[in-house]
Length: 232
Image (cartoon, rainbow, N blue to C red; front, top):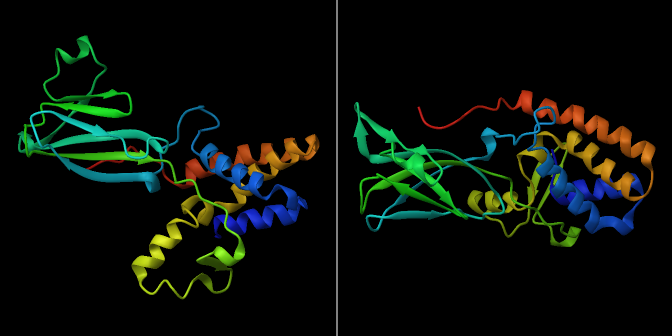
């Protein structure tokens, strides 16, 4: 468990490359994103910690939802039309590709660029529930004097005195770390090491670290209990 900036500091100190602080931060962001790919199946990994549940309400008989932060958006998992019921339950819309697939679907949605369009949701003022996955936000490296949150192995997280409420502390924590850094920092370190050593021409250590990262990345899939998610 640690913060983004502290992990960068650790890697810079370990590899003796104090000239590569910003590059190491970029390697760390890249490694976090790489943890979202299954190394065996070569497909996107969906983690429960990245699942977001939201609701939108139509203002007219048409409804288009713009994907929030499209650079982080991973996958729309489930769409439920709260005002359209069948067999005593709200209807789940079906994803289709634009074209002939829409002919046989009464309740469906499709993607158009960085947006989704919904059909059969009930019309104006009706509510649509969404469940979707977002990659963790890209974190920024901060110099020691600019850090609002720090971590110590014995005392845990410490917050700047300006963060006087639990809400302010929680918001600051989101800007300093994420669940992968907190629970899987050792795995991420191997991925960062591999990139640094590759950059500096130390191919032997780069290969060894990347191999360790590949093996450990698979453990994240197993331990985090990836599920289809959605509503019961």
